[in-house]
Image (cartoon, rainbow, N blue to C red):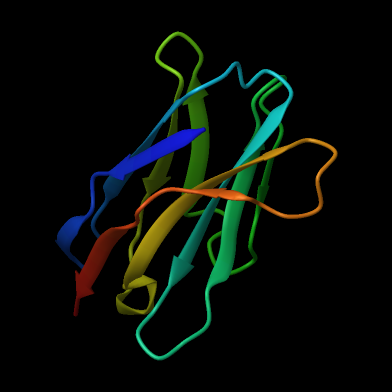
Length: 118
């Protein structure tokens, strides 16, 4: 399994950004794709996830209502649409993948930096 995250950059507070995670190496129909982030000096935290089959999503309270995860089946790509960005959203964002019955995410992308200026 290979995951390639992209789309990070610098944005002003209140702005929007869309991250992409291109997945390859297998069929992901029974998998869950997750987004995590790690801010400077902080531990990595869960942002949200999506079940590839069915598209069921889950979000951390800190991003609920502002971030949306979606997927494009034909492109094997998962997206993280981030709206109403805040300076505290500044972090390196990672996509990850696990089989639906696994309890942790064994596969990770390389991370993409999102910087939100005030």
